[in-house]
Amino acid sequence: MSRLAALRLGHFLPALLLLGSGLLAATLPSLTDFFTSLFNVLPTLLLLLGGTFCMVYGRQRELFILLVLYMGYFVLDDQVDHFRDVGRVRDDAALVFHLCSLLLPMLYGLFALWRERTHLIQDLIARFAVLLAVCGVATALARRYPLALEQWLSTIRWPALHAEWMSLAQLAYPLFLLIGVALVVQYLRTPRPVHAVQCVGVIALLWMLPNTFIQPHALQVMTSVVMLMIVVGVAHEAYQMAFRDELTGLPGRRALNERLQRLGRNYVLAMADVDHFKKFNDTHGHDVGDQVLRLVAGQLRKVGGGGKVYRYGGEEFTLVFAGKTVEECLPHLEAIRQAVEQYPIQLRDRQQRPGDDQLGRQRRGGAGSGRVSVTVSIGVAQRGVAQRSVDEVLKAADKALYGAKSAGRNCVSSQVKRRGAVKLKSSES
Ligand SMILES: Nc1nc2c(ncn2[C@@H]2O[C@H](COP(=O)(O)OP(=O)(O)OP(=O)(O)O)[C@@H](O)[C@H]2O)c(=O)[nH]1
Image 1 (cartoon, rainbow, N blue to C red):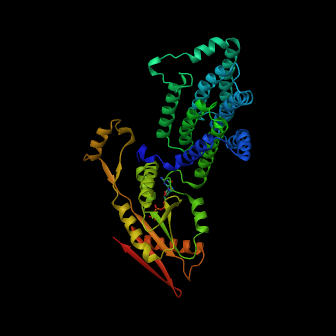
Image 2: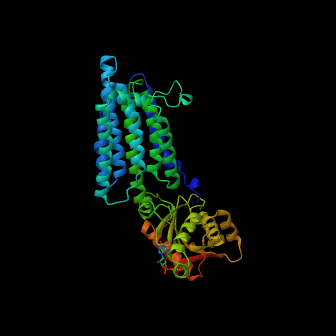
Image 3: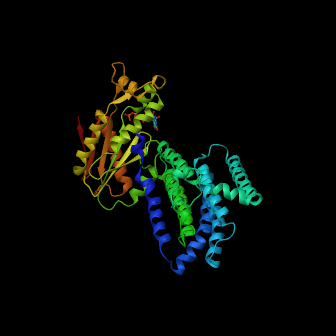
């Protein structure tokens, strides 16, 4: 699967919806008392709840992003409050604002790109040390040389690139660009929900900073929104870990158990099993076996007739058809059986794999390249008078699968129970 194909709207959608709602709320001329109070406490609440959640699950990276966002909010909110109460900005407002417009994207980007690789405690200490060092140096410089620092920050270094609407320190724009590109590259290399959320978060910050003193609720609303995005991203990944099978990307056994609880009165279950997979593993190795499981999963996923496929475990998959009869499902099962059988699997020696794509394509087409194919056997059963509970239907599908294996494999078998008699129907190529 290409990296672009792996790019999933589902990874971005929650964050984009939050961003849209945030923009709407932040640009409203006034908010009701309820929402004003809510957004006043939301950043603190999200730091406490989201931070605890991240700590419990060892998500240091997201914990520090939340911390950086909150610190930025804390410092700027003080300035905005003064501006709102007195009607003019504090003397140090320009210095604080320019410093935040550099430090906020810088620290956000740094922690977003800094993967958790070392031991949890070491990682925590290293991140704290970096945060303290950067904030400590910035505070010391701001106290010691306020005027020089403010001048340095507000200098327009590249007049040709400056536009009227650019209210941040000019250095902030290339910094935002650099971080945005780095985060997009990170997502393309590893398409994970938190990586997607971090990309959208940069856009929200880029909108928030210039509007901090202009839109009355920009700071509270956008800080809350970005913090919420990060927490949602972590929750999304926790859900995926629990319900998705990592190898194939299919929903896993836990997701299947959930689905089986709410199937209604009419449904069909099918069990699909890769034939002679032990032999395949023994011949080609476990790694190639894993690749094959991914390919088979990719073919099974295409099943028609409203079927949904789950990885049951090992080399077994379960297909669920809600509101269908066996007769309606058989053509779709037969189609995927054929699709798996006809799918050519290219075996390549890892060590001999060329770095060059074109060379790789040539070699794949070459006579020496090894092509194999695998087949699946499928057993299918339907809820009926003889098997009423999900367990019974699953058992019947398993029995039909056993029948398919006995009938020579690479076929679909359905077990139809009528008045105690068991009839096994096999369709073979
Ligand atoms: N590579 C790989 N192999 C797995 C995985 N899960 C289970 N297996 C292997 O799948 C094989 C299952 O073999 P068996 O259940 O004996 O059946 P089979 O060889 O497929 O033969 P039939 O089902 O009778 O056609 C075992 O060798 C397992 O090690 C996995 O995630 N990756």
